[in-house]
Length: 202
Image (cartoon, rainbow, N blue to C red; front, side, top):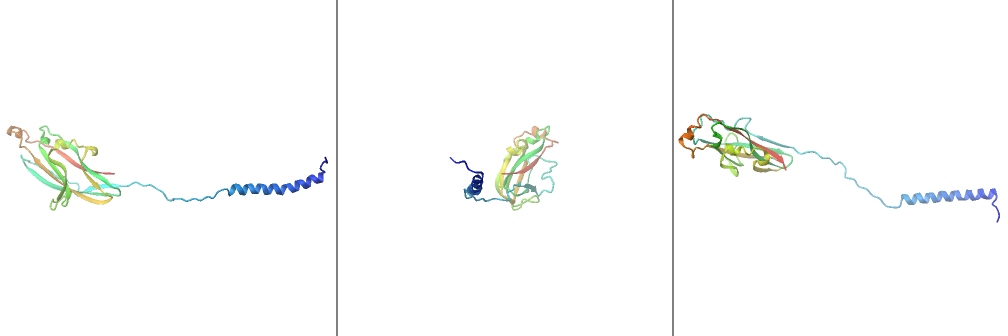
């Protein structure tokens, strides 16, 4: 067997180099274009919270301030609540700040609350009832047990946007089941409660 001369080795090496370059390029081309690709993007995603607000038309005034109340006295007034929300929600009513009297007057002041349309803080004229929120004969003491949104009464479902609902409140100093002596014991007594409506998003 003949031993290659140095000149022969150089020629072989020179011939092999372009082949190696071409082979490497072929591998790169094959790996770079081995599959078709395509992409798409959903851009500009962001999240922001909704907002809810609930107001009424009483201008900070008490709906009932009764002095010198006498047995079986009664009165009816209205108040309008307005919801302004970017998301739907539900309005419910409950009692806060109950005032308990030593004589138990809160057991004998009975309320009824209906919700509907028309009327407002100044007058119930035009009020059209839709639902009974608190049935007639409910005492202030009973009402005081509904003291948070979770056990509140009513359930006005409001859509996103602005909408209003009027509440007609009727109270009666009901002494019909009391003896004269029991009625007399209620003289000079004082009680009170706040009606509160709350809107929570769905």
